Length: 408
Length: 231
Image 1: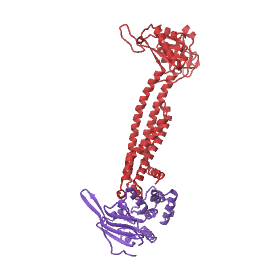
Image 2: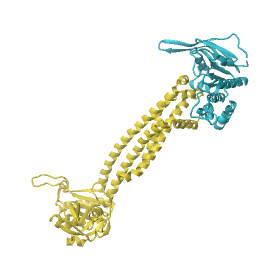
Image 3: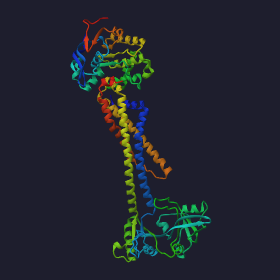
Image 4: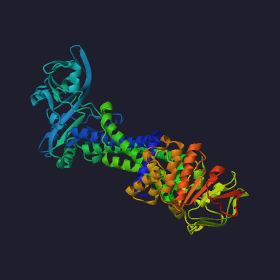
C-alpha cells in the first residue's frame, strides 16, 4: 500500500468520524490560533512602542532634572529638582557650545483648568519655545505655531492639541477664540495635527503657550523647566550631541564631578530598549501559556486516537486479515493523527490571522502576524499530531488479527 | 487431486488462562487438495473457529506443523504472515466485515491495495470480481445501501479478487435469510466447479451437505470420515 493510498485511507477515516475529528481539530486550532495571536500582540506592541518613541522626534535627547536635596537634607526623587531653567535651554541652543544640536525645546508646566465660554476641560499646559514643533516632529492642523515674537512679548497666545480643541470647541474652529487658563485670557492661534496617544502621555490633549508667558502668568515667575528636548543634527551625531549637552550643563551648573550631576539625559534608544525588553518578556510569557494549550490539544489528539483504535479494533483486524502488515496499520493511524494535527494547524493559523485582522478594530491594540511564528506553529501542530499519534498507532499495529476480529 | 493446498500434521493449539491450560485443538492431521470443497462442522466450543483461524494464518499453532502451499506457516514472521493472508487466502466472514464508509468497489479493491497493485489494474480486477458475483450494478453503493445477501456477495468478491489458493468461509450464511443463503451457496458451487479450493465452516447440516467432504470436529479433535464423500 503506497503513501497515497494510506493518505486517502486516513482522510476517509477522519471524514467518517466527522464530529470527533472536528473536536480534535478544534483543540489544536485554539492552541495554534492563540500562539499566533499572542506573539502577534507582543510584536504589535513592540512595533507600536518603537513608532511612538520615533514619533517623539528623530534623534532626540531628553534632559530631565535630577533628584533634589532640600535644606534639611531630605532628598527627593529623580525629576523633583528644579535645576533646569530656560537659561540652560538657551545655552544648549548656542551653536558654539553645542554644534551638533539642531534644536532645543524646553518644556515646563502641568495640568491646568481651561475654559472657553461655559465649557471647561483640564489639560496639560506647557510653556515652550517655537522650536518645539520641529524638535517634537509635530505639524500644525490649522493656524500657526508660537513665534519668537510671542516669546519676547510674553504674548497671551495658545496652541491647542487636537483633542483639547475638540473638547473645548467641538466642531467650531478654535483659531481666534479665547481660552481662560490660570486666570488669564489666551487667544488660540493654532491647532496641532493628531499623532495618537502613547502609553505614557496623551500627545493630542495639551495646550502650548510661550515659555515666558507660562513662567510669568501661570507659574508665578518660576523659570525652571521640567524637560528640555534636544534634537541632534542627525542620528550619527547623536552621541556627539549627548557629550556636548552633558558638558554644557555641567559647566552651566558649576559641577566638577560626574556624580554631582543634577540632571539626567536619556536617549530614545535607551527608551526603546527598555520598552522592547518589557514587551519581549510579556510575549515569552504569553507564548508559554499558549504553548501549554497546544500540549493540551496534543493530548486531546492522543486521546481521540486511542478511542479510535479501541473503537475500530474490528476494522484493524479485518485489514490485517486482508494482508495489512503492522507497519501499514501503524502508518495509517500515524497519518490520521497527522491529518488532524495539520488540519488544526492550518485552520488555527487561518483563525489567528483573521483574529489579527479583526481584533485591532475592536480593542485598539495592534497585532502583527509573524511569518516565522505562523510557519513554526503549523509545523508544531503537525509534530503534535505525529508525536501524540505514535503511541495509539503502535497499539493498533500490535493488535493480533484474530483478537481484533473476535471483538464485538 | 492434482495437488495439495494445505497440510496439517499433529496441529495443536492451547491457551493459557492463568494456571489453567485449555487445549482448543489437539493432534489435527488434515490434508486438503486443490479444487476441494470441504465443510468443517462442529458444535460451538468444539474448536472449529480456532481451526479456521489457523488455516487462515490469523493464528499460529502451538504444536505440530501447518503447511500452506508448501510453506511452513509456523516459521513466518508477522509481515510474511500478512503477505500469505493477502495472496493465498480469501476470507468470507459471518458478519461480512465490510468497511461501512467505503463503496463496494473500494471494499473489493482493499486486498489489492495491500498487495501493492497499481490503481487502474486494481479497479479492473475489482470490477471483474464484482461482476463475477453478479453485482456489476452495485459497485458504487456503500454496505448499508445493500441487502445482507448483496453484502456477503461483495465480501465474496473481495475474497476472490486476489485469486487466492484457498477461500475460507466462516459461517457465511449465518446472518442471511433463506433466499440469500441459497444465492450464496449457489455461488460457492459455481466457484467449486471452476476449480477453486473452498473450506467452509458451518453448523448447519444443509449447508455442509453442499460440500464434497464434511469434517466433524469435537472437543478439539477431528472425526474424519473414512472416505471423502463424493457428490
